[in-house]
Length: 390
Image (cartoon, helix red, strand yellow):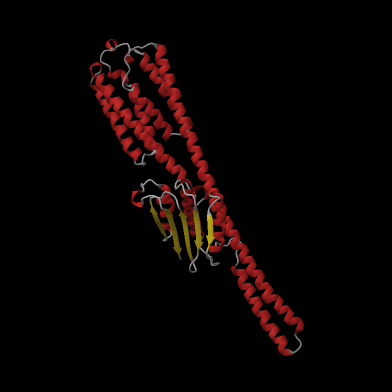
């Protein structure tokens, strides 16, 4: 998995929240549009009802898909284009322009604001800015014409300026929040990469220490025996030991790799440093840790899930104490516990959109054929146990 994709929890959560808030805005907009369309029915022809039906269909589809978090970017842009098209065709829906009251305001006014926000969510910044500009300009043309009631040009200009600046402000806020979420994800990715690199470095260092120990035990002892060998029997013994030393060192060299994987002990040491960096008051205990190799993907996923669990406890649980217990009870196994004394929660009430729990913790362990056990109750804290074995 590329480092830039190690974690995107903040971005995913933000996008879901944006779509849900937009769904609420769209629901209010739909009510306003329908109410004003009904009140203006006597001034408009049947084409107005067709326009209304098309707009409502687009709004309802976007409302439900947005609330479920399944709205694709092109749907938001498509809704914006539909709204702009209906505004441009508005003159066709007016029966008698001269009969429109002076203070008349087409019911499309209540839709074009939400369409600008939709494009801000679905499009890139420059595209959204272009759309908002065209949207405001087109509204000024329609509203100040006889088909919009021929209201005072100054009022139409004020409305257009309000549309431009309010939609632009919302769009700017969306882009700034997205950048902050991406920066958070990047920081998390770098932290995870740093943790994994520390674990890898620890594994390499332990490998080198093992080789140094072999050199000391085998080579030096062979040299000492050789220096003191006097009888043919001693010399024969030296030759035998020298061959054994050469054989062991050759096998060790062939099996050595400076890009060695991870060991449980190295991973736990790195996790301890990362956990303290994330939550300085956390209590970390390393119960055991082997030196056998574990796959890089396992080390990465365990790291991501552990840091996510600590982050949840640190930010949401309102805990006064967080504990991290690390162990390798059997060879080729990992056992990680994150325990807090916070407010807790009901597991059966966890929403499906809780990315931090379902995807970042449970999903990651399941992808390894591991297990994530979450025990929590209100006011009694939470214990998250991550288990993996080869």
